[in-house]
Image (cartoon, rainbow, N blue to C red):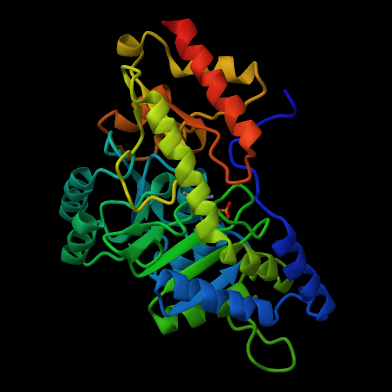
Length: 377
Ligand SMILES: *Cc1c(COP(=O)(O)O)cnc(C)c1O
């Protein structure tokens, strides 16, 4: 055994080194510069959207996207309960109230029927729904065939949180191309990284330029520092954009490695009763993270037992996101629930999924799981 096996470590090497060195040698260490512009163009093209605004986190991109669709105080915003906390936090930053919606038990993505019921109910109460935020959980797109027409009927803008899904597709369209605005994250554990960063994507030129303005301290285009609005310091630095451009060149190769891992997990666990891959069968997934769901009564073991076994061999695993309605920070928040997300939290486990895993590390993981399955029979 050599070293810890991480869930999803950054995958960087000589290409990234070269791009970073070039950015430094070009003299563009001051925040904005040509790599930011090029990175925005290249990501926009990859996602098939007209405009991209590079920012310093996915969370910042979410905040700007919500402001861009005019979410504000007194609004409610529908948010999947099964997500990373940033999705809900960004809603709170705007002064709006998040309402959490439970998930489909098979995919983990928002339950579109539950969302439909909620929108009708909120309309009946006379509440203004500022936005519906969708999350493409673990790199699998939400049910846009249901959600987009539903939200259009209600006149509610969709903000797509594609933080986990860059490179994924849904019926031929790229993650990040759904809704009025979408966001990507380039945090260190995501499918590609700028060490920290994010991107706002939109087809709306005015939304993009206003977001760019707000992200740069709402500075007016004059020589002295003139501000008529309160802005934010959200822009991505040129050096980090260079890292992003190198990662983007390798995105397909990194997705392919993660996909091979998922397929190998699926094969290994195909014979194990009571075990399934969360959201299995989605060919458009970017396979950012592979999670299994275990029914302990059928399997004869629980995910907690497998996690402990792997931890004993220095292999990192993690539960599926703890739902927002169970988080102390959102205690008392309104939620429409079926119990599906809470069950996935209890019975789901995310396995090492990173593209930087070496063949030796992958073998170690698979041998450890095989040993566990043998021992638990
Ligand atoms: C990672 C993530 C974010 C936030 O991205 P940061 O770049 O870490 O700010 C938002 N939403 C989801 C679903 C995420 O997984």
